[in-house]
Image (cartoon, rainbow, N blue to C red; front, side):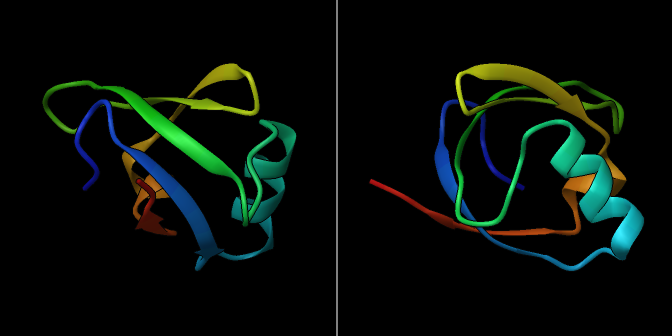
Amino acid sequence: MVAPGKKVRIIMVEGGIRCRQCLAELGVYPGDTIKVIRSAPFSGPILIEANGGKVMIGRGMASKIIVEEVS
């Protein structure tokens, strides 16, 4: 899990086509740099900033996104 305030680059999405489509509809793509804004407690959703906008994604979907830290 990525700590709030950290920036990461999306390397790939391990989910199926529906997961990738859902992320694309939110404007989140492999190669994008995103920032984790907030992580809700008790396995709640994660608020991220991507391409100038803020979106919430569920933990299940977030667990399928492979990232690397950026400086």
